[in-house]
Length: 486
View 1 (cartoon, rainbow, N blue to C red):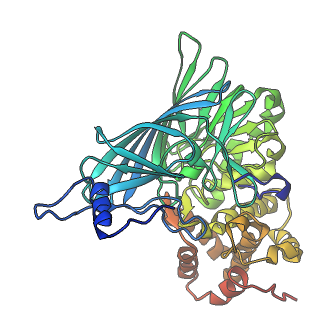
View 2: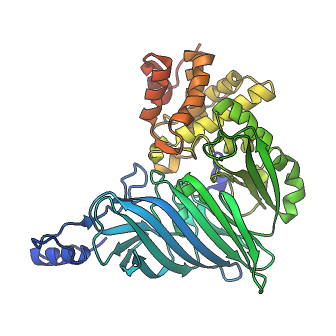
């Protein structure tokens, strides 16, 4: 995403059991009465949270999701969302119960492999207890039917994310946790999955999402249903929905695929959309997307997804651009070439290669910021070194090391973006152009559609360079003090 402006920042227990007998009774109930022949409890509940350094309750343990099938109907007049989420996952332990992240909405019913499941709710944690325990390694399908008026989340930095209502629709963005405001799931970037989304909206409106639009139909009452397919793994924070009066355009990005992600080595379909009052003003820049992707492909390697595009909204709802997978979302005020280059670069850095934890966010933002520097160097004749020197002179970039933001409030502060890019420029100057280009292309190839940490990156860069780079990391990635470069 683009660096957030402080003036636009987004908004953001239980009783102990009394005695050993009560504790054992509670454990037996949670396990669903599933026992081995000896009578002992086999399965245990999956963890409620993955202990992320900044969001310890985000995500859940005990299973790995492979696919979400979301069926949504939205009524802008009332703000009501009706949804069904079908979640296919594999157990990573014997499970007596497991959790999903869901904020605010009412759950009507839930099932596991078509058998009703008991549901408990505590804040944003939805606990499901299946009728029979789920054995380690088993694939299972959870269905949750829910409804309500989604509310945005206010983040630690004061900015808003989640399901954001507009005058005639909504925009859904999810970094870092907002996706749980509109569908239940394992909402940590380490659990990526494929998606199918079916979206029904009132007559006269368009419903947009990630991936390839596979169907669009209009019912007798005028309601419009669209279906979207995202084949490649996606972190839930990158899922999006946009509903409103949009004009769409299609195109093709040629020479960007590799036949693995797209099945068509020479082309990727591009679908863009802009709300009608701003559509004409955004047409030319939206039309540049195929060429920008082609230029980035030449520098970063094959485009990693089977579709591309952008969604541009009117100002007033969204205060920042976000790299939602295959189809970044922009408010009109942020839809400029520099920001577009940044968000499209995220398709390689952040979307295909996703952070192992939120502490690794600089790998997203540092690379996307450096992509801006590379673009201006190649096509506007402004050397990346010029950007580096400007960033070096800004005291805000030295508030903390990019790999160690002090709190969740600081995740989107300047050091993560600007000093993250400075790390990459120093790497470039240290290892030389040829080796740096190999790293720039090899990193998203090695971790394509996977997750990676800062340690993974430093180890990879050293393996390509063929030497120890601790001095570089100690000063630029982890150092507290601004170095004297005179």
